Image (tube, rainbow, N blue to C red; front, top):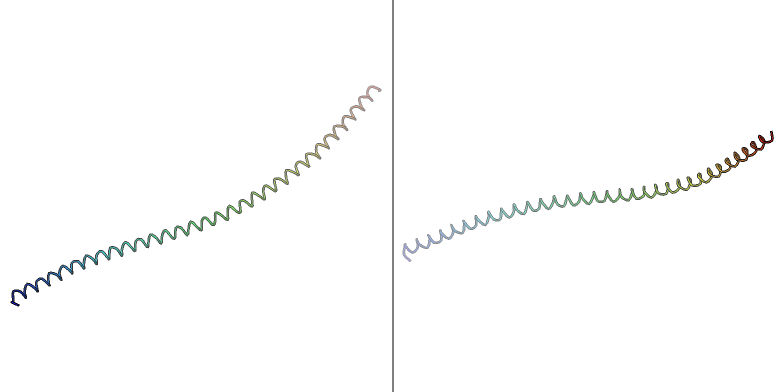
Length: 119
């Protein structure tokens, strides 16, 4: 092999190594970009997961509040029903008392009017 041929082979090898080095650098940049993208995705996922956990906690709190409200409404309804029944019983007794009083007054008036006519 002549010196010229050796030189061309060495130049070829050097050029191949330079191209390989450039390609390797580009590949490294792409890997770095992919790693950055992956990190951003993982960060986003972590925030999403945190948000979902927060929403789940809020939903559980709301569920307990709704259950408490249902119980409160049920208790209020029972109290209102009892008050309504007591009110009806009081109305009935009051009506009976009014009727008795009206009869009493009617009898007294009738008795006085007769007494006035006689007197």
